[in-house]
Image (cartoon, rainbow, N blue to C red; front, side, top):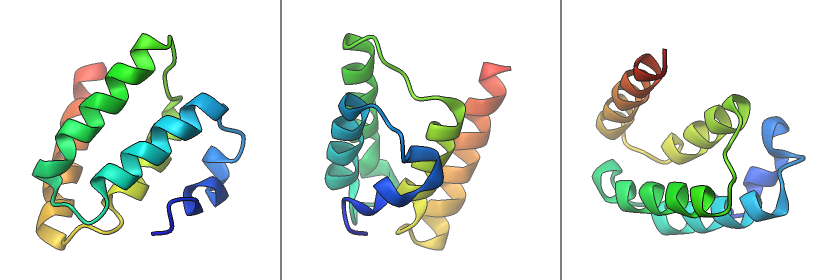
Length: 92
């Protein structure tokens, strides 16, 4: 995926410039890596967001998850979806 293609996603068009930078770095760091190697980049992005007092909205988060899983193989995508569902269940 072109690193700037995420800007075309309807849920990310009006993204705060600081969030755009964090998301761009996350996508660069996770591109082409298996799911288990993406976790450090996801955690780093989350820490950066928290340090800046930012968070992604539910729509933004959903779009980001779609972007992150787009290049995954079927096995990694299944694990990613399972992890995403577990995280969603923990929020409720």
